[in-house]
Length: 146
Image (tube, rainbow, N blue to C red; front, side, top):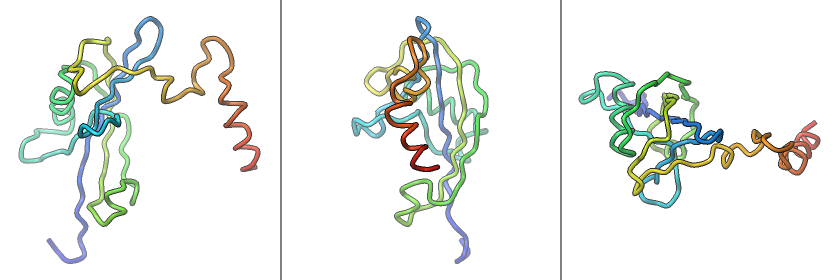
């Protein structure tokens, strides 16, 4: 590799969404058995993967046991230093995110779990009233910013 070239990893990430009993749910995995959860993801391996979508499907099935149906590319993230590993001197990570819509099918519960969407996005939960987090956290932060 030339001296001034930069190593790059292409990572695929799945946002897998289901709606159960009128509640949006997202599928998460236990990232590297740390007890912290993440979206299903993994590196693209050109020597093994025909394309990015087939790579995504392979990682999702390996990490969750779920066979995806509808998948659509959502966004590509490639900003420098957005990955902590790059900050520490590692390679740059370009993440290609996909959204998959499905039913809340059974998954390998040792590694994957369906979670309430509003756990991650509480300001979006208007089912009963205006979310308290808007007045408690978001509006004061915006006022300080303005």
